[in-house]
Image (tube, rainbow over all chains, first blue to last red; front, side, top):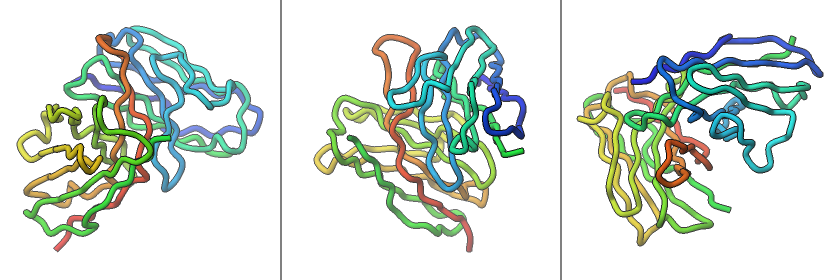
Length: 108
Length: 122
């Protein structure tokens, strides 16, 4: 299985901050990396697919980058509604698909 | 737009079979892969498997011996059965649609159902 490791596991930030979350794959996955946002008690919501493509309706303050084994999700200016848990997921190997352990973004 | 809704028993006894159904509304089940994903309380997401509308399946090797995912196109539904459950199978179970770019490595899950908590306990 391809292991996905996110860092940090939790992060405290303030409104207006630039926030970066990292996801590392245990082997090269090209740019087959997706990001999801999950709020408490809710289902994950797709933010970014194929490492850097913004899902329709997602604010442009969210951005993704990376290729190979190292990827980042950046929020350019943190808004109150962005406090949530973020998950990365690889689609290079579908047997099985795997997710990172999640990064919880909290208010400082 | 397409919406998904999970249904099924919220409490299952150890060693019994967990059964859930996902109903797809606002669009046809045809032409897509349909997926089950679970999340134990306070933990990360685990992909369980998917079914194509034609009935072909792909399961997580870690669960393969206990999982069956099937589709009923006439009802626009797909289902999950997980046998011989233990407390470790307690989780919120989500259904989701797999979206992909044909013949590439790119696929993702969107949209998702709201999720349903299944507790394994006697």
